[in-house]
Image 1 (cartoon, one colour):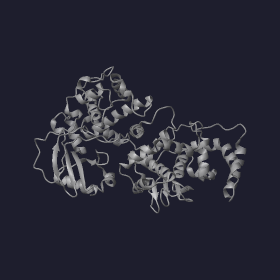
Image 2 (cartoon, rainbow, N blue to C red):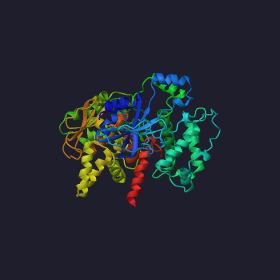
Image 3 (cartoon, rainbow, N blue to C red):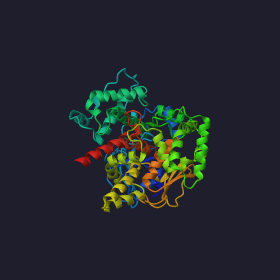
Image 4 (cartoon, rainbow, N blue to C red):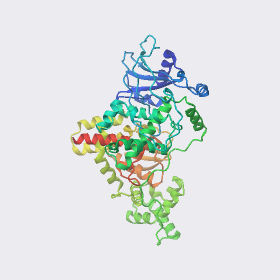
Length: 539
């Protein structure tokens, strides 16, 4: 059923005017936001379980804000619904589970009280059970106390099952982690400013957690310096999710939302951690403007030749690198840079440009870095991504992997599956950057094109388009990925929004490129899952 059809059914049969919906994803055994772009994931479901809560229109927000939301009428009820088709009875009442944390958009999670509602009405085939809303800042009296000089861990409020895990010094399972985060949210939102903790407040809360239970400093597969980012990320996700799902009618939240809507829209992307030694190199004392121009003229002539002298070309590209880098950092357009340096349309020279940038790792060759990194993580990534919904081409590769017997074929298929599997784990939409055959692309800066299949090895079977024009062609999918990364580095581009976390993961984890030991907070949760899966493979 289409998204609009689901909304119409809910409005018609339940009388919910502004529904907020979550569907039960059977692959991950969790309730996840049901939004317009979720249709690709749910189109094959025969029975779709949906949780529905009443959202607030702008007019309702205004009225509720004026009344300060102190009445019980401000709390909306949360229902579990089953959307056909076909219609079939389902049992509800199990707690919803949190989706993987994502810092650009929160996913909802809330423990569900399974006590039947006293106001429940006769059940229709569409309505199976009604459950009250989860915990929120409106469900308890907010004291308005000032934030303490040192935040104290709320020991007396910790649920028994969570305390048992603490006593045994065991990692918190998903259920207990949700309960723990709920407890912290209810405690912290009693204070002034608690709905929107500052960065310093989050740090103090993390201090309280780790101070009370130092064993939580150990998170599988994470360096010590990244554990704080892991816990801070959990808190940021929890607060953003709860404000959106349960406390969106509070005056502070309404006001923040209005201010945000009035702010000018920011450009996509941003400054990323590059991990480069030669980001802005100095010109050699042997070179001046005249010599640089001479080198550029020679390279332009060689570009037109059918058999260029590649050895001299490499030398002249090395000598002109600082001048070329200066041009790029002055924000010259891609077209302007290519007009002066047409050899940046060569896959080989793009990979060499990456070496010239001096990645701060032992091995400078990007292909070797990619293969080494995939060797460490690909088996765990393939196993995890197999359990989730993915594009048709990746599913076909998973099927091929199960019947391949030649080791070299299995290895290459696993490498390609792992690259695409990373995007699956982050729920990023590969179909908006990777196009097959005659597929037409949206108007995007970067596009990856596959002329036949991902596992094809053939002359010019793949190509990359930059700003609407083909930049380079190559023979394998992994060459395409290496060329993509080299292109982003060479032209100082930001990561495409549709694959931002995927490429950040490849940069930080697969290639090992980062400034310092910190792992980017946007990828910590998925990295933890992969490391746990890797550990289970060793047992």
